Length: 443
Image (tube, rainbow, N blue to C red; front, side):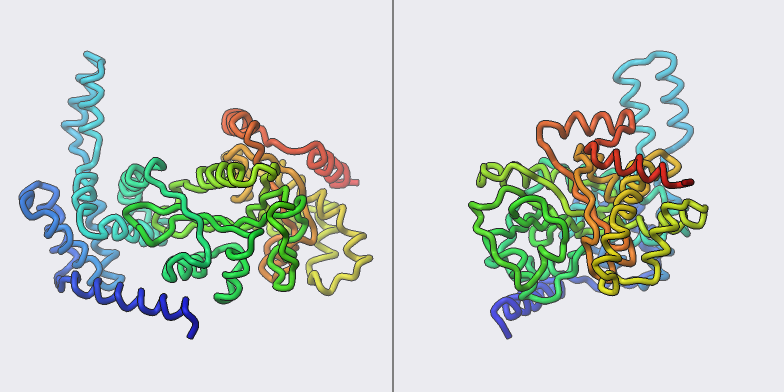
């Protein structure tokens, strides 16, 4: 057993013993637990409310999945705003508008559940428990829309509790605590970390780095992290960055910082964005410590490209049909050099059109990764193919990847134009590729 495995095992044992000491055995039905929530929200336990909050959360943990769902459904129907009082304050505001009347409307419109959740948050590990509760709600929200009020309440409160002013940026390296390193392995969502050796290759060499945001309420559990490669120029394939036999680059010879993996760690905080702040903070950190690095880009997946392209082919789009026909039954390794060269331009053209034109009903890009980076003010810099030779990369995008460039002087302008006008910042090359794809659609 290596040192980091031993450290992680010890951390796990200590954590389990600590949890066991503070765990209370609370047996009761979901209905009884909701009744205790009502009492806590009413203020009857002000002298012992922390103890009561911990008992309620322990009771929630003790429920099986069906009972937890019953509890959440019951909780969603109580502690709602009092409509007569709300109507009265609205009428008063309409008669005599002003700051005081507006505050009265806000107070009347705020669900008393906010007070309940705030008091539950005072319990030991209350924040983590409520984030986990929201994760449970999110997992069933599509089928059980009655839980939407609970989700909205928790999202609102968690957004305040995880205010960006409280976020702590830390560099993760091989000397970081074992439980933190294990979180990085487990939470990596883009390019799987196979084992401890793989992790070390990503965080230990001088041309590699990993940065994470932490919060005082979840001290040893990262909220989000980004893996960075320092390179000479923009890379064209993620496999080159992850290659076990690659040559380590002297940090002083690098001129480009590549954000090749960003992973959110807390399902209960979904929709509460930290990624834009993380990237900008890391850019500042790298620019300060290594001023010779002047290019900041991503090497990002395009998770919806293959699905979108197949739909275009079914709609008789000739350019899409040509690409799908050539790649549908192939793998990256089965393609000869001539095959790749013959289809590469068509793949890039379709990829540019996907990023610039494929939209959801609300006008936002279909691609979730594009929405994130464009919303941060990045611009579409380059397309790369074949750039992801993994089975996952091929199944989602035929191996196509994209680099978004973070140019500090342009970020705010690009962000405002995108959010207010829907303008997607991109290089002229990307625009030409998309135009050529459109010419071929019906040619």
